[in-house]
Amino acid sequence: MSMNEFIGNEIKSNDVIVFMKGTPEFPQCGFSGQVAQILDYLGVDYKGINVLADDDLRQGIKDFSNWPTVPQVYIQGEFIGGCDIVREMFQQGELQTYMEEKGIPMNGQATA
Image 1: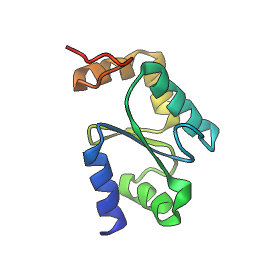
Image 2: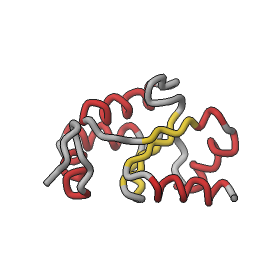
Image 3: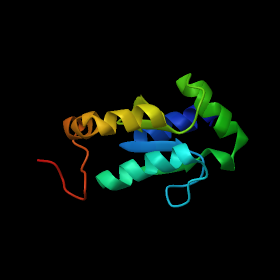
């Protein structure tokens, strides 16, 4: 399986996935930490993939999205953006609305 296939498969298999430095429990950069904090605050179930564990993955996700930085957030297969975009969307309530529209449960509550 190529790196692109691996990344594509992970994105398809998880409603919310973050390619990040470190893990959701132990982020290894401030930006990854902020994204994890926002998603944790919203109570969203998400998967974090540590790009520091694999140089091919670290470069591969940048090539895959054509986005130069990590973290990268995908929701139901769609690339949302990095820390600045996610933080801005969160502060304006857009992230919460987007999650609701996609039927992503927040704060442990299933949306009706």
